[in-house]
Image 1: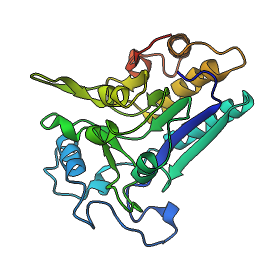
Image 2: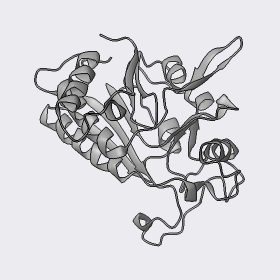
Image 3: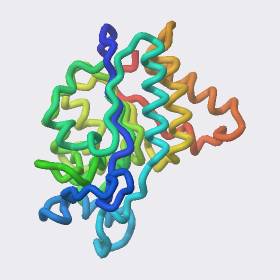
Image 4: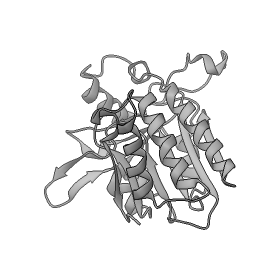
Length: 253
């Protein structure tokens, strides 16, 4: 991880629907549905939701309001420690920004949104960013697109559902987001192994970053372990369901 850098990037709470109240009635392009794009996203969402593709993609994805709180709290922790957080939410939490802007100089890249696994076609596994307002992308950042990113020496934390899963394909090993981000240059990737609740995840991530970015910073593996122990010691989210799915893959120091 890029220890000397004070910059972290927080991507959270994207807009999935054209009627989202955050748009204030502004008319924006809807990815996939309006431009014939997003077939991979439709496939992945249908696989997860079991809808057979009969309803619009955006209508099937609930807003994750807790991820916004999560990003704002992490930004406060970063600033308190002398860090320089950049927060991309709403329309700025977009595929266009992730693929078009330089993200190689961040110490941490934190992505809090829906992660989808297409068990039948693993190339359509990815993370869902803003589905409206994109000019070039469809809003669904697939594994094949992540391979082409330049992540630098960043810790990538995927605070999303099922992001650590992949499908075993003969001759290619596990195809998943973990491998994709590591191929793009990230030495360490934090992922979840099953669907998680956004509120409990926000608490875990806040605890993690207090330890990672505090005045006496801990290595990522120690910070995550201590954050999980704090969850166990509490009452509300002590069950393993809430804290156990998150693991760090790659360089653990």
